[in-house]
Image (cartoon, rainbow, N blue to C red):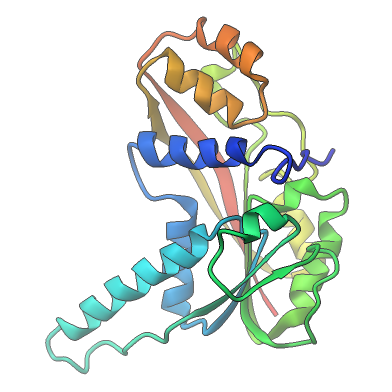
Length: 249
């Protein structure tokens, strides 16, 4: 089933999710930072960020480019590393509220009907968005269509077994695009795919309030989240499970 979209009705839930990750990430990098490094390394110039939210990938790409430039300029000999291309991001989202805070250029549209001609992007990214769709394969097909030959598709989604330490109080709702199904669904369009799994203790929740906020960010109502959080021994470190899936046009 598709995960509900509340980005216009309750944008603060989305923003809370962002703050929880930033505040309590205790190991590794965020998903957008990882994708930005991949795109920078691939030399992607024009990037379509499908379900862009308020610009996390845009920010991460700016940081990744700065890091890559610094590395290139301070490596001896100076010609050892190529100077990376500066990626340009087009943000696309169905939510006007999200787009209002995203740097331009932005386009309001559905992932299943991209308003672009064929073969124009070097990369198309869909991080934590395809589970909102009843037919994610239709959106994957649209991403394939707008990619230039050799262009890269990157998507990411959590596992249906995410956050096992909280299983006694909460389990993720079934979705139309969880990590277990994502490789098969992407392969229906792109054929051969690469899968990069993550399974690591990445989020440390120090107290009951942090657990409550973590659950609210995952569509649990505030009252139910508070009740569940009271049953969790803290501090607790939560294992994040999911996958990145890569395809090439």
